[in-house]
Length: 198
Image (tube, rainbow, N blue to C red; front, side):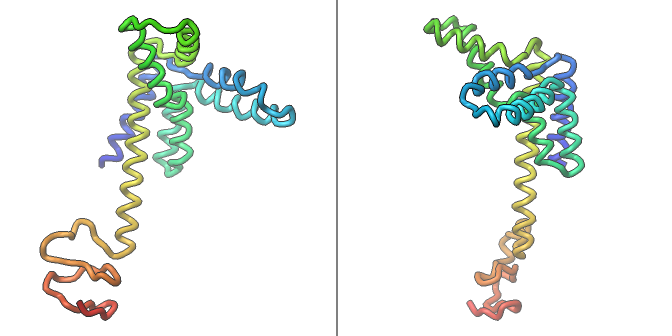
């Protein structure tokens, strides 16, 4: 049930990003311009193609978040989470840079002209033109992390059930065999499964 809440959050974030026209495609163009002098000429076409794909995913913003959420729903969660991360321009990174820039501007903090220029240039890459775009991005990022956390919790539960340890039955009426992990009555001094005496 909790997992569906995170899906709903991602869907709502995607819809708000569509309404607010949130895109982050300029971020990938900036990355390409930054990295191109350091890339070997024979690898340049591959890097261009890869960044072009990322740029298109990011260009469609909210639509890409909806596609990523759908992929997570049909059990392609790794690909879906990657698409959501790309669509929100690396999610947390964009939000952190946006928040830092907003705080500096709001408080009127004096900065070195070079630092101010770099901050302004990076800030312009993340297009949160409206409150809806920003809210949608925040919801999509939170939903993605919530889905990731709930999937991790499901994996832990399935691993513990594999070992024969039932998390919900860890009450005062039972204990676990130190050898094989089977649940036993509290007063037991012998395991029927592995034959160990306590």
